[in-house]
Image (cartoon, rainbow, N blue to C red; front, side, top):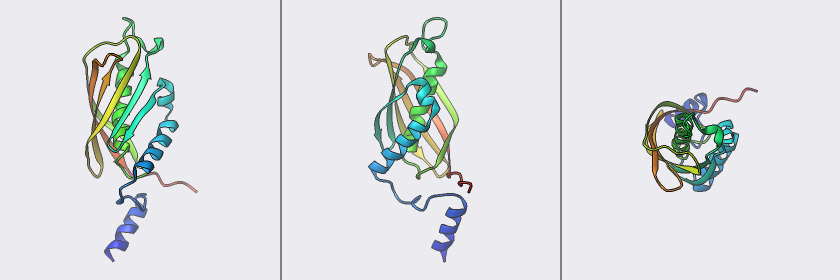
Amino acid sequence: MQKREKREEDRRNGRPKSAGKAATAEEIERELLRRFHASRSTRTFGYRLKEIRRGRVALEMKVQRRFLQAHGRVHGGVIAALADTAAAFAAYTSVPARSRLVTLEMKINFLEGASQGTLSARGHLIRLGKNIAVSESDVKDDGGRLIAKALVTVAVAAPLESSR
């Protein structure tokens, strides 16, 4: 009876049947690519997905003139968006299929300025709980200089029930 009650609870909360089953690397990559291409911000900033592994994601972004602030450096908000996206996608690689994530908190240190070239962000999942995940990301420039370091906490929610 307990298994049946658990399945019913999962169904009511929108959790997929496979929520307790670990996804394969191929399933993780397919789901992440779907989410990546569905995101408007990834297109707006021109992110390129360079690596996907369970708990890890690497992104790149070519610096564009429109991303520069008045002093000719990439705006901190643009760097923060890249760091946040890498950290959140790192968490996506380990949550049940179709889970929804939303950033609850982000702490970022800006360590260097950047004005041209390509910025890369590597996200790494630190801790995954039932409702919260914590990831970190490093943003580096073409020369390997650490531009920013972020710690990101995201809420993990079940998928929305589709309306019929």
